[in-house]
Image 1 (tube, rainbow, N blue to C red):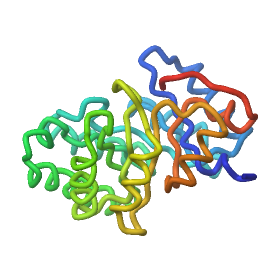
Image 2: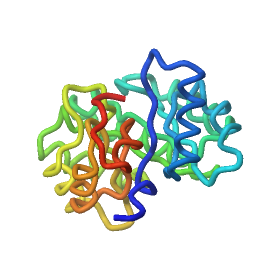
Image 3: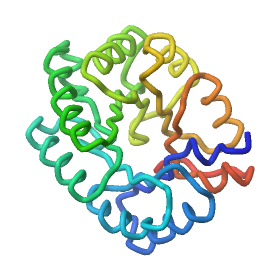
Image 4: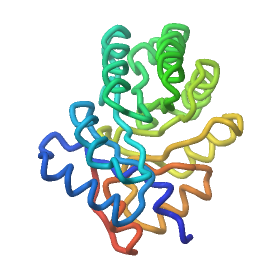
Length: 223
């Protein structure tokens, strides 16, 4: 696959990452034509400026990595990220509320943030954290994301016990309508893995191993 770089959200969410690391991330995006830079909210404006002469989007995370922030906190975080220039927001679903079967609460939070995001012509990806879900849960989570107006459903934060799995992505693709895309993330380290997730139905890959993937090497786990 010649254009695999265009599937990749080149990701740097390590808590120890420095400004120089984000400069390097942007340099790698220029060199490899990755689809986007996925960075912490604090670095959105910094990275947006560095990528001024690139076609790459700037993506950031909201309610990350556990999802149990108040809706008001997530709204404020989303608004700030959009004001700083973020093109795409990866929102962690309220997993506590979901596990409590407070499905309407979960849906309303996503819907509220989706409306804010779409008003700014940006995209919303909802992280459902598949490591904590069985197949029944995944079906319900996907249905909630669809009803709430998400643009993507994303598998993982990369901070749970495991990341994306092929069979889960296949299930998500089966449940979701064709206009809602899937982002597989967490533990994707090789070209072969990347192709397998794309064939399973993912249209975006979240990984910190993008350079290794496009060069045919092996990356490292984690973000």
